[in-house]
Length: 89
Image (cartoon, rainbow, N blue to C red; front, top):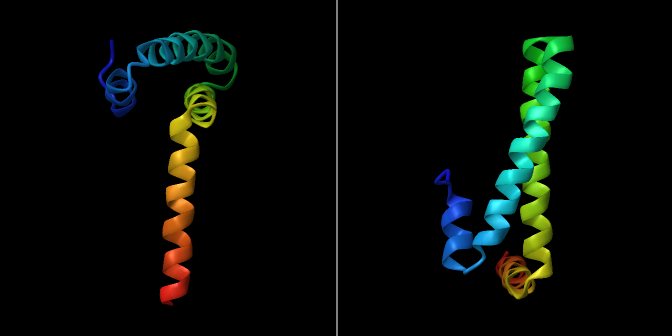
């Protein structure tokens, strides 16, 4: 298992299955995109495949955060901080 900030975050939140599913989907989508794009476009295709893989994994994390209670609490806290800064300016 790769140790990234997201792995620590989801492990601490008892959501290890989210991390493992995102990792699995990322490996599968990255492999498919790499074979499809790198063979045709070379290094540029490989870079695009890497970007696509990261986009897929990030979307999985984003959807999980938005579905959880943490997403709503974090959104309210950020909104509170933004509104407080506007008042002080």
